[in-house]
Amino acid sequence: MDFNFSNESLELQNKLQTFFDKHIYPNEEAYEKAIYDSGDPLHIPKLLNDLKEKARKEKLWNLFLPDKQYGFGLSNVDYAPLAEITGHNWWAPEVFNCSAPDTGNMEILAEFGTEDQKNQWLNPLLDGEIRSCFAMTEPNVASSDATNISSSIVSDGDNYVINGRKWWTSNAINPNAKICIFMGVTNPDNPPHQRQSQVLVPMDSEGLSIVRPMQVFGYDDGYTGHPELLFENVVVPKSNIIGGEGMGFKIAQARLGPGRIHHCMRAIGMAERALSMMIDRSLERETFGQKLAEQGVIQDWIARSRIKIEEARLLTLKTAWLIDTVGKEEAKIEISSIKVSVVEAASYVIDKAIQTHGAMGLSQDTPLARMSAGARVLRIADGPDEVHLRSIARREINKHR
Image (cartoon, rainbow, N blue to C red; front, top):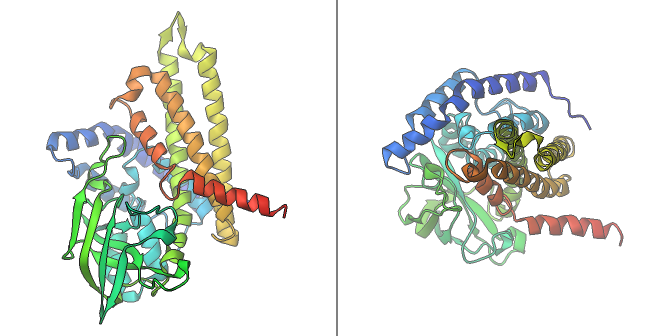
C-alpha cells in the first residue's frame, strides 16, 4: 500500500489550508450572522459567492473529480487529505464546488450521462452556476435496501410519467437547485437489482412540489436542507434517463462508493478540529486549582481521540488506495468498514470536546453541536451502520464455510 501523496496533492493541501486560514475561519461568524440578520432561513450569504470566486481564481475548484477532463484528475488517495481539510467547516465544501450531493451527481453524469445531458446539466454544475439534488430515499419503505424503492417511472410514448414521495432530498430546497436525479421503478418484472432507473427531473417541472423541510436534531440546514418532495404525474422526455432502463441500482452503487470516502474524510476533518478545540479549551480553563489539561480524565480523552483519528485515517486511506488500484467493487467491504468506524471515531472525539467545553459546547457559540448532529446523521446516511456491519460479517463468515 502506498499512501504517499503526489506533489500536486501536497501543493493543493498547502493552498487549501492557507485559504482556510485566510478566508474560512475568519468568516465563520459573519456567515452565520448574515443568515440570521436576513430573517430568511434560505438566505445564501453574499460572502459565500465571494469566497467561491476567490477559490476559482486560486484554482481550488472541482478538486474531487478523478477525470482530468472535468477536474484535477486526482486519485482518491490524493483527494482524501483535501476532503479532510474541507471537513473543518460545515459549509466550506461548497466554496470549492466539492459539496454533496452535487459531487455525486456530477460523477454520475460524467460516467453515465449522454453528451446532451452533460452539456445541459454537468457543465453548469462544474461551473457552479446551478446546484442539484438526488431523490432516492422514501418515507414508506426501508430505503437502505435500494430494491425496496417503490416510486414509479412509467413509459408513455416519448416520455416518462413519474410518481412518488421522497424525503431527505438534500439541497432540493436550495434556490439554485435546478435539477434532480430521481430514482424509481421502470421495470417491475425485472430481477430486483434491475428494476430501478434514474432520470433527470428539472426542479421547475409541473407536478413536483416541496412538502416540507426536514429538520436534523433541530437544524434545518437552511438552503442546503433536506426536504420531503412529492412527484405527481411529473412528465419528462425519455432522453432524460441516465444510462438506460434498469441501471438505477448500478448507478447508485457507483455513486455511493467514492461519496463515502468523501464523507469519511470530512468526518476526520471534523474530528481533528474538535480535538484541537478540546485541547485549547483544556489549556484555558481551570477547575479545582488545575488546568483541565492537567486532569487525568481529560488527558485520557485527548490521547484516545488522537489514536481513534489516526486509526480512522489509515483505514480510509487504505480504502481510497484500494479503489484506485482494484476498483470500487473489490473495495466494498473496506468502504463499509470506514463508514462505520470513522463515524464512531468522530462521534467519540466530538462528544469529548463538547464535554470539555461544558454548557458552551451545547450552544451556538461553537461548531461542536452541529458537528455532533452531523456525525450522528452519518450513522444513517449512505446506508445505516447495521447494513454495513451485515456485509462485513457475511464476508467474514463465508471465509470459514
